[in-house]
Image 1: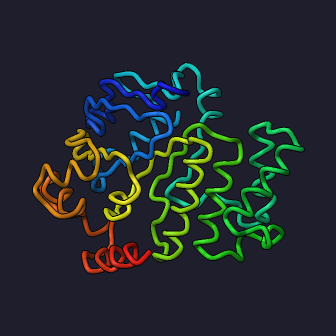
Image 2: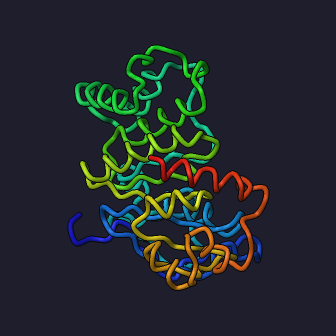
Length: 267
């Protein structure tokens, strides 16, 4: 993966019955990079992720995931990435261990390596002592951590996270990103994430792409975007670049976001 782009997108377009959800976007994500994909609700983020992860075919343009074509090499592409969806996707009637075991079998991870990896990841996300507990007894934060462990089980080269910390308290959110940053350093895993918490993106991402109305309107390092707009934070830069505030249904109030910013800085 050295000197190779983990994700390459060229002139990507997706139309639904004449409506253009993603409009001729191009960008790349370097191998081992932590990359944030930001935008208001309905901007085209989720549609783009679905195309990157083989869930939707594009109308036009090309995609390469680890050098592979998601349309023509679906199985190989799926084995090369892990994903944490915005909506919960665990089986509540199974234990934590069983959820990971089932995932490992699906991805054909050999049993001995699978058991080692399950133990390693459950310890990493501090759930080893709850391995035999049913997932329905877990808190929201515990479920999120388990989903992260599951997504990493088969040693993916790219990890997609769609709103991974939505609804989590600042302490759990901070701990979760510490896990992911350590894994990024340890395994050189590429992380592609969406979030509405601008402070999270400003602190974690090495580069940020902002999409609005289906088009990428800005791409660069967080401090570059802040400098470009003459503002003091990525949140303020985002408001300038998109021309409007984050829509009410998709984010916390500005006061809550400021509270989260203070909590992040304490850590």
